[in-house]
Image (tube, rainbow, N blue to C red):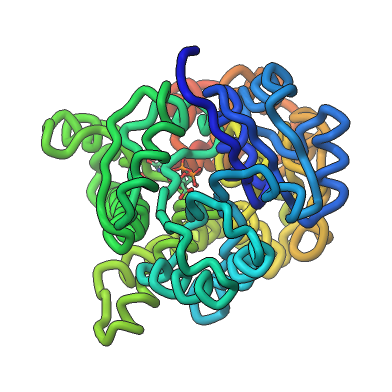
Length: 431
Ligand code: UGA
């Protein structure tokens, strides 16, 4: 690859940092990833990847010579031209983003006056750029250019999204930093949009909030479909054929989860409220999403004439297939509601890590589908793992005590399931 290569320090070895680090190495740059968790760094140094993300492990292995992992901030920064901030910005109780890890990174950069840019990839509230400028100034780095380069990759397809994005957004008021970041992305197959910092920060939150809005809107239409006998899959398919709307993010289900949509929509609402107005549409989107898993439990309870003493199996625990991420997974809300109503809860998932604490401590983890279905009164598809499509549903039906199958992701064909003897419910399709 004939391109200038750069030294990049990535702070944070989570989904975002590891994917960005591995992809920059793939593009020919030398990358040092720094994290504060010793187990994480030792796992990476030993050649393993501490999280499940398709395509990431081979990418890290292939670029091992250009990828370094360290606990030491000074070591990471020593030869770096660019520092990428990829740390967690979890929500506080009020919905604001907790930026303490970001400030810790800026503190750790003290003395790194050789840097050509500090770049934010973590999702932060609009206006954070201005605060970071002040923070950089206070550690003697007032002259170092700052840029926002928000991440639009989705878990489970992050490597592909990074290398072939719909767009790369770079927000900076410094021409040299913009040029450096363009160089850094040479080889990435997608357009680059350069803008000011605040707009770049706003693009990220706007995109996630709009996608979340489509999902909640679809879930509301699904509820109306249930009330009127219409079929949401037909409705969304034909609606999405309008090129102005497109078919994406119109899958009805148990609501959106994950580390991004719930957090970012609350952060945008908090930003609006801190700016003196109430973002009513976004509040409704969030409320609908909070309600969605509860609606499913209510329907299940009606079908079983009460949940007390019933055995309910949850199929899929992660917030979506293709990831081991349990953050804000609808399964957690469903499990907690079922337990609160006195059900006995079993769960199955092909990759979810052992889950500790409530509600998982009170559920029974099954290692295979046969175990999960044996003597169950009902099964609820929470996450659309492809394994479920391929399962032997006839055999599983024979293992159950009851017959209720609630397909919370509209994964299966209703007629087929009914023919096999299931009392089949789904979201927004005629029952
Ligand atoms: C999301 C965005 O898709 C990425 O563009 C963004 O970069 C990322 O957040 C982020 O901010 O870092 P992700 O959270 O990995 O990515 O997952 P998605 O595939 O977008 O799914 C989010 C949730 O929405 C899942 O719970 C999924 O089941 C649900 N969903 C998605 C639906 O219920 N219906 C749909 O039609 C689509």
